[in-house]
Length: 281
Image (cartoon, rainbow, N blue to C red; front, top):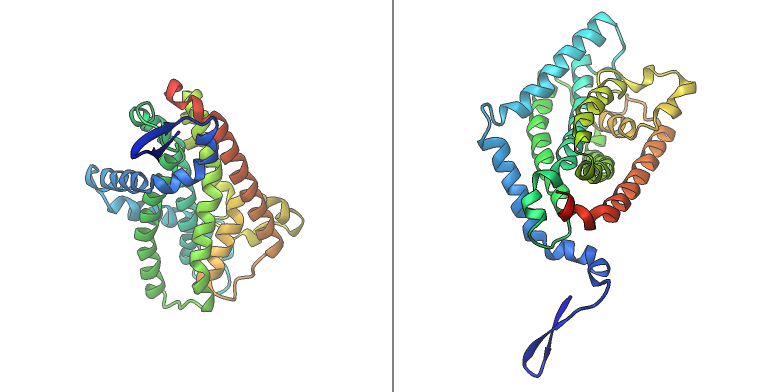
């Protein structure tokens, strides 16, 4: 659909397939809607909760304490380089919670915005993308705790810290593909939302959050790196903890490849089912 001028009067043109051909350009045109949805989600997160911003601090901090006691004190697992175990755990906690927050919020975003989906046209992918802003705000709040921990332990990062934004973007890159796929499934199969918390809880323990991925035997480490979060967490730790932390490049490339595949698959499945969202929600 397009409006054109002819003889001083607007003319409406109906063109088959135009919505598909202009889809990605429409995302930019609807950028104001993106910011409105993002701001609304941030306001709801921090204004209509009992503890507000404290939730973004308490959740990773308490999880760090538990993992440090279980894996560091009881299991006696090694840390990364010369870093204290608690600091090593927290540097794995931050990218994991960024990943899991995007996956959790974006996967339910279409159903949560059913009234908007059924009323007006806009690229539906704007809705799950807007939830990424909330997850990023939570990450920045939790990152302040990481800075305080580094000051507490008198641990100074190396030059690798300059590359940290790259791995933050990679964490979001790894999460949005599965999130789009699950968001599309969640519209058709509403009981699928009960599976997400279980998958995230399972992923927390199989990903190298409470322990270093270096404890995985060498013959299994490349296979273990097919988990797309592994490369992100390893890179995040390498940036924060410095050059003493070995960086496993084959595993990082494998994780990046799996993340790229899920991004392609998620966008493909989302676009394939997007036309039916208004009827199903």
